Length: 558
Image (cartoon, rainbow, N blue to C red; front, top):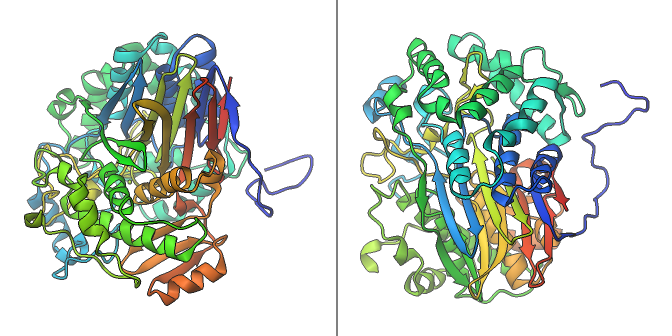
């Protein structure tokens, strides 16, 4: 990209010092500065925290296409006038999609790749025998219906006005931010191999062909702009029952998809009661299954039954890792669409479960097996307004550019959430028509003594529960401020005894963890360690907020 002076906009030679940001009238935190400003503008015009969250989420579909889009899913926790509400905006598989059809295309099935070989051990956290992309991975997109549902229940601003910034950026162009540029360019060689398959050509044409993707390069997505205009005018109804729906179904029929008019017409996001766990005096709140927010609560349930020393201590990290492995092992075994889930969520939140699993933590790294029940994952944003309302919202394709399927002429990328289904017929999460898969997007919310503390979240697939646990520990156990809680070096369990740590991790701690049996890999690449945001409401009504140093984010405050 041409410049009056020469520099690399993606370079980070020195650690940046970020401070906590304080504000009184409103805040928007997310991974993209222009999206945060779009939300803040809504607040300044008299909208509330929910309006700001919707406007920010819609803007992010344009400004961060690798991570989310109009065809994404959405989960949200909303604190509104003294009560916490949960919205599950994930979609089910099409009614025409069956396990047998997927197996017919794959030609083989390896149960070990569904994470549970005969040993019951998770050998690769993100492994699945489902395809990575294509129609077999597409579930009914829930984001547009969720924007509408949030606004109908809580919104104050005119619905169409929440699309204005996104439409402007799509039609007039926006400069790419460094981390988004990096993710976009990283995917270019991966998708280039799809150019000989007709169904992937619209995605390549819209998001890759003739696109300058360096930081600061101006990108235009005019097809998305037109679609967003139609959604604004129809209150998103056209996505499920109107002209946009017909275009989606036509594309599905012409390219071997499974979506039908009935699938789209019958979709509704679901209002749910948040689940919560009291962790050392703070209530940590999550969306219940099919999301894996339960993994966060299971892990914290285990950790509340062990003592944690100071933060920068190898014994502390070892206990965190072992608890996380247990939480994920049980989560991957039992979490599913609640209509199919045999396990009782209350058991995983009980002291009985926490004590039992905490007692299994040893001084050496181990591979946990799922608990015997007979014995007993994106973009994230959070907003706040001067009335004390707050929103924790997450929106995602799942993998970058989702299913790699983009509806011609619309800019709509379809998600690949179905990749998280199991093909094991004995598993509660086994693929079935009209069923929701195990879901990785999880907004978080903290409360204390019935009062709202604030929204928090860390996006990044299977890093999300791990990032949330580390953030909660940093805030509650170690007394770090919100920015320190996000800045702190992170670890990530990826399966087996393999643990990835950031390059800033203390080398002495790395060696100690290796001696305990952990297979430690020091990673220079930072994008896999999650990208988070935090808003904390203080008793005097002032907000303290922080944004992720691993992303392009800012705190927009008023």
